[in-house]
Amino acid sequence: PFDVQKGSPVAIQNIYHPELGCNWMGVGGQVMDMSGGPVIGMIIKLGGVLPGVRIPEHLTSLTGVALNYGRAGYEVKLADTPVASNQSLWVQLLSQSGVPLSKEIYFDTFESCDKNLIIVNFKQIR
Image (cartoon, rainbow, N blue to C red):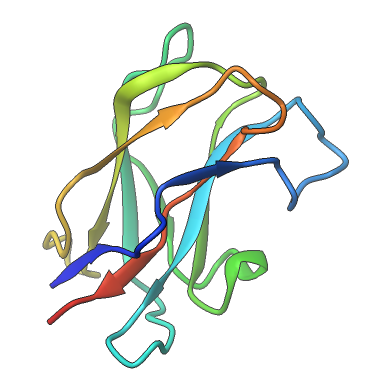
């Protein structure tokens, strides 16, 4: 019932942790319902591989814990430095009971301090 919002994923500069500068890379965003309201308490699961970085098998976040992104914001730190990858990482929205609510959304990462935050917003479509 959820898909990525138009314009997602998009890579931008890490604007939410300016004190870390280029010593951080992550993915974040928010989840909205059909009317544009926040969907809080859902699970964001991250998987895949990142060259030279060990990604834990059960890396998750909850919507509503990273308010910089909005009321239903989430964030997952990926690495201590930007690393380039091509469609090898994904995020997926799950219900509180672990039922998939979206497909796995694959995204690129970049070895650039200007693109070390990947924004993936989800929107309810039915």
